[in-house]
Image (cartoon, rainbow, N blue to C red; front, side, top):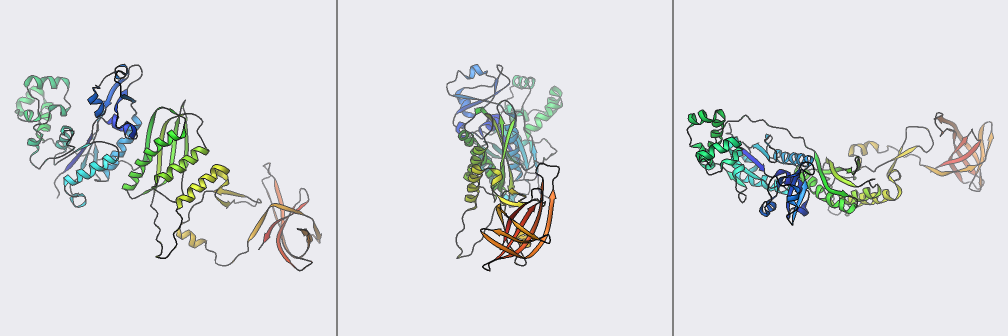
Length: 503
């Protein structure tokens, strides 16, 4: 049976990191996150540059504005929830057992990595790989590995900024945790004053205190703190099962009306969606952009190419053309991007087969055509389930599966009908209630065989009332040329038309 082994992932200043994750242009600037309603906003998080600049928690907006190069962002719970889901999803790709121990302003999760050595190597290598994966998501974190759940969490909180990874050897939890400051235990103000009056400032000092005397003075809470300092606190692991959902959200600092500015934000969100899909060997099959409009309301558009793709420029171009053809009615204050995953396309060509054009070129071309002629005028024609003449609808192009293509293969040759649009008016001579002759394209044809009539009528409850009698005829001209066609009669206005030709 494998011994217990845990890896704790901790991301401090999480409101600031969640806000800057999709804003690469602000990562090199000092930034703070403001919480609350104006004019009582206060700083609740900051990045490292803001800390060096002197920004402190609890500063008001007036105090923040006194700093020359300090950017202030509004706190967004939606962005933090999306970032937390992304990190839990990333952790879940390394272990199926993940517990979320996040607090307000801090993301923290613990992975049960016992038995994963054959997949990811020793704990140091797993921690390095996980840290690199998290960094690609735009989050700076620290990772600690220990055989004790709480020891890993305490170690992750006490790691220095230049040392993002720490591994506690088995049986050395007390020695490794000893130099860490007592502040990592989230003491209450009363507990902090008590330990300060005793001269206790590190975990090693707390661990050296006698247990019974500490309980007598601080109660059972003292016993809990002593166990945490010694790395001996037991824990019942409570794993969570985060759902896999390709979604990103972002609140804009100011309303945006220009499409180019919007696409700059969408590009950063697409980077994250593609990165997460590639981690599961998937591709983006469909992307839906939901825009939060100024003044309330939302506006959503969906783009779906013929094949799933992880090509960022393709998705940007398709979204650009779609939003350009269907612009929102107001300025945009928030963006949500969701994607449906699909399998990556695999095409195997022969050694001497000619190179095929890229499917993405067809998708972009069709998007440009739809922008010119309209969504309902580009695609493939699908017959409606009705006898009405010329009843069809347009659907987007889609590649059928191999089984569907095999079933749809015709077993024998069939006649091709060519519809005449518009139908050609004609005069038909009747004989014994059957067509005998008619004129078409300055020729007179004598009917040799006539099949029908095929009567069709319906939708009497609609304004588009239709009632037709169709005949399939084989006719011959005076010069001997043969014509196979379909002629239609409208009894309502006693009008004859040549509706279609048969090849």
